[in-house]
Amino acid sequence: MTLQQELEVEFVETDAPSGLAEIAKRHLVMNFTPASKYREDDLPIFVRGEHCSVFDESGRRFFDGLAGLFCVQLGYTHGAEVGEAVRDQLATLPYQTTWSVAHPPAALLAQKIAQLAPGDLNRVFFASGGGESNEAAIKLARQYHITRGDHARYKFIARRVAYHGTSFGAMSLNGMTDVRKMFEPLMNGVRHTHNTKRYRRPEGETAAQTTEFLLGELESLIVQEGSDTIAAIIMEPLQNAGGSLTPPTPEYFTGVRALCDKYGILMIADEVITGYGRLGSWFGSTHYGFQPDMITFAKGIASAYMPLGGVIASDRVIETVLDGPLGMFNHALTYGGHPVACAAALKNLEIMEREGVVENVAALSPYLGEKLAAVASKHKNIVGDLRGDGFHRSFELVTNHDTKRWEAEPLSAGDFVEGHLNPALTEVGLLCRVAIDAEGNPLVQVSPPLVMTREDIDELTDLLDRAFSLAVASAGL
Image 1 (cartoon, one colour):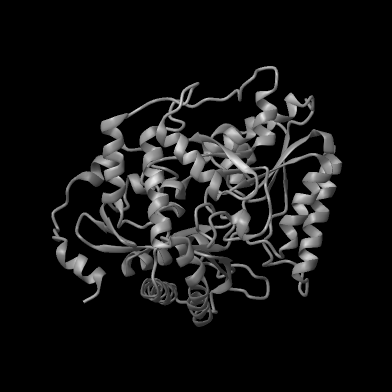
Image 2 (cartoon, helix red, strand yellow; image 1 turned 180 degrees about the vertical axis):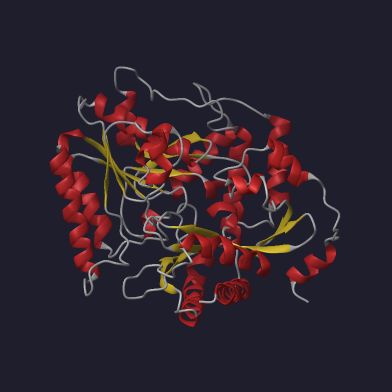
C-alpha cells in the first residue's frame, strides 16, 4: 500500500455536509471567484493536506497539481515542524515592528536570503505578499532615481499579459487587460512590451531571431519613451500568466540587462513564483544567468505556511536611498517582517536545504517534462503547445493546429473548460489552473509541490491523461 493510500484509509470519510460551504457562500468573498460559485455550483471545502494532496470534508483526496497557488513548496507534510517554530516564536515575541527596531527572526532571515540571492543582492525589505512586494519595489525604484536627481524617471516597462498583483501600483504593471481595465486610470507611465511566448510567432523563426526581435522592440520602446524617463523594467524569469513563458535563449535576459545598463534603468525580477526553487535553482534569475538590481519574492519563502514577501536589493540601491534627503526608505508596512512569519520562513528554508528540495526539482524536471510530453502527444488533437521549465509547465489547447486557435464552434473555449474540462479534473481528483488565455485558448497549468517524487509525477500525469480523455469524450471532440 502506498503512503497516499494509507492516508486515505486513515482519514474518516463522511457524507454528512458540515454546512461550511453554505456559510462560505453567504459570508466569504472569495478571490477571483465567479458568481456561480456563490449560487448554483458546488463549493469545495478542503480540510486537510498531506504531501502533495489535499482532502475535502467528505474525505476525498485531490492531487494538488498547483502547489496551492504556486506556493506550497514543501507540500503539506511539514506543517507540524514549521508549527513548532511558529509556536515558539508566538510564546517568545508574537509581534514587533521593523520600524527603527529589529528582532531575531527578521534579522536572521534577511541574512539567509542575502546568502541565497544572486550577486550583490544583500538588503531585504519585508512585506506580506507578492503584490505588496512589487508595490514596494515601485517605490524603491522611484526613490532611488529621485535621490540621484533623476526626477523624470517615473515610467516602468513590463510585459504583455504579465501579472504582478492587484494593488494599485502592482496592478498598473499588469499586462492583463481584463484585470486592469475596470480600474483605469491607474498609475501613470507604465508601458508594455512583448512577452517571450513563441507559440504563434512567424513560421520558421528561430529562437535567436525571437530574441533579436524582443530586444529590438524593447530598446525601441525605451528610446521612444525617452530613456531618461524610465525608472525600471520588471519581468518574471518565467512568466506565469500566458502559460509558463520561458526566455527564448540565454541571451534574452543578458540582453535586457545590457539595455538597463546602457540607459541607466533598474532591472527588477519578479520572483514571487520563480523564487525559492520552482525552476530548480533558488532563484529564477540564477537559473537563467542574469543579475537584476532587485528581486521581489513571496509565496515559496515560507511555503505559504505563513504570508510573507519582500524585496531584495543591493547596497548600491539601498545606500543611495539612505544617503538621500529623507535619510530613509519612505515606505512602511505594519506586518512587514512579522516575527512569526519570519520564524516560519527560517524553518521552511532549513527544511528545504535539509531535504534537498531545490535539488529534487533540478533532478526530476527532465522526467516531468518527458511524462507531460507523452500526455501532450497522446492528446495532440487538442494540445497545441506544451511549454515551461522546472516544476512549472503549461498546456495550450487548440482545435485548429494550422491557425493555432480554439475553433470548435459552437463549442467555445469557455464552454469546453466549464462544461467538460473542469468537471473531468474534478472527477479524477486533480487540482490545477485552467483558464482562457488572452488569445482565447484554454490553458492548463501544473505547478506542483517541490517535494514531488517520480511516483507522484506518474500519478499527476496519469490524472491529466484521464482528465483530457474524459473531457474530449464528453465534448465529442
